[in-house]
Image (cartoon, rainbow, N blue to C red):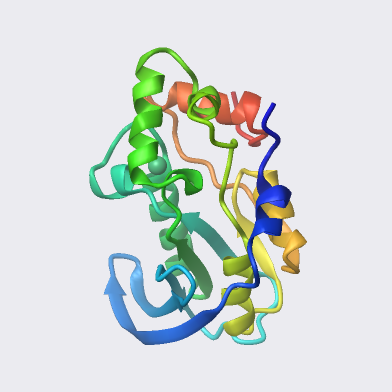
Length: 211
Ligand SMILES: [Zn+2]
């Protein structure tokens, strides 16, 4: 039986090598944000930090560590709640006047876009999101947190209040040395299409969601 991947996966990765590649101001619907691009020199992937306010040396910084979701965020797919979660995080950061969103390039909980669509095909056959990944041979969650931890260190953030419903994200970051002073509920509304997905998150992946 595949185990929850966080610790096993981290062990496979050498320490990430990140280059702080570029940064500029980015006007958004949620206010003027600072956009910093980190290049992972091992994978070629570009991860993004979006923040507002003075975050260096900050304690308990309102923070979202968010994994990219092309289908949800760009195509407005209703199979997941990624776009709503990202929008909510950016709105909260903008309203607070100080906060950070780390946008991690790990599509489909780390399995990649093509494999995510293959998993969707399995879901069409009746598997839930966890079992769909398992029948394709993937662990439940291949997201890694060492890169986010390295970005937080580079941005000199001392500790975070993490916007997430997922306790494993808290422990995954803590295992990489991130100090999480508080988990902040990050609820978005359920609707007809994502209800099953949210229910699987709640019952099978330990997310702290209202029924
Ligand atoms: Zn999504």
